[in-house]
View 1 (spheres, rainbow, N blue to C red):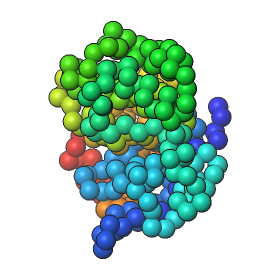
View 2: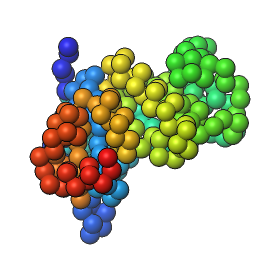
View 3: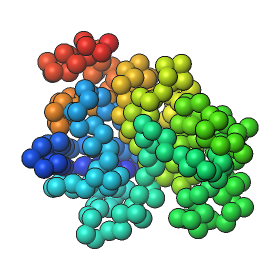
Length: 245
């Protein structure tokens, strides 16, 4: 298996005013790996994800994407973001566009693909997430789970090298969670490199190559799902897992 590093984070720090949200984060994600971040709300998971996509800019440390150290003063961050797909808690679909129009918007405007190519690829992606029959409907007619699957297809339409998921099921009704997690599991089987923030521990156990437990802005423990869930070494990890499992 190819084990090229896709993401490396060295001594990453991020503060909002006087509040330090990330403290000396070190992290490596190799190609085709699925890394799942767990921890209580406010532990820094979502901020770390947003730093990886440069939606939040670090205070210090280094972020290396696909072998290239990215700095906000030397790189066009919009170009870098084309490599990194991101799916948020809330779907952020354009309500005035059909499902297919949502999918082809970025490929045609940002990547300058022909409309014909973007439509052809968009139809394939919507089939892949189980929504091939919803091309011409508007987002408001879809369930939350369906809208989130459209959001995943929209991110995939940019052919990203990495996918980031920030609690992709937390805004969904419980009965809709499974369909979104199923879509992400399929991506994992296909070898998509992913970093996922989730509160769904069963899903984390099933899909992750590595689980990282964060607390108060630090990585407290990291290991395989079996190591972290079955044999946690740190007291903080043990306390967290006993409260959620």
